[in-house]
Image (tube, rainbow, N blue to C red; front, side):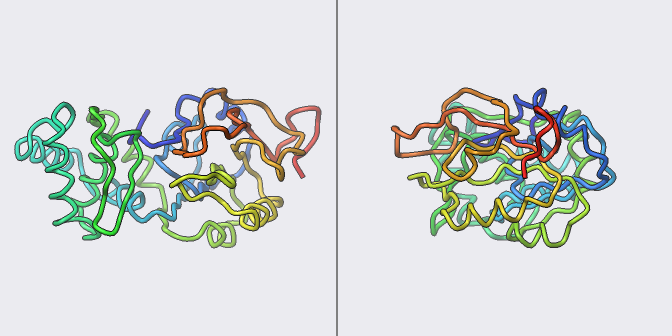
Length: 268
């Protein structure tokens, strides 16, 4: 099940991720880098409580909005855009008119409209990558549009009702939730890209922060995590984070876990 399109989503790998997540006995699920919520909405294990976080307030605005609204609210605002601007999927001019109208009237308004319109933009822009400049969302037309069905909307809503939604630094989340299971899909390390990755110091701090937690963590191998023994390849594809450096190696992404899974060895 998909909530909205997002660069780097791991929705298609849930058949590999879920068996690891299912091993936990923890009652609280925490995801400090939630992105599109692809993991959250496709978990096979049921938790008593869910906590999601993202440093990007635009992403969190979408989650907070869909926790509050009903399907009619969503559908009415979607139809308003189609009636006002035409088909933003197939008509480039319609998309840009809508995008500019959104930036002038709703960006950073903390309104229901902002959240729904951000969701629509995420599902119609190029590369499924919401990008912002000083004047608002500036990602180009994608010749695409994903729309939630009533059935999927209700499934998403049922999870969000049990979810605490935060917009904080991930370190604060870890400090506040010690007795929980974590799924980490952090920023990539040291990439020449418009997408801000972890610096060396940030990455080392991240690894130190998670060592006493129960977790599953996905990343490409780098000089700091390459010695982790408890690993399995979960995908072989082009990296989905936008990058200007086409010579980067490491197109494989790995799953790391704190559980005793492979050869009875733990991560730390």
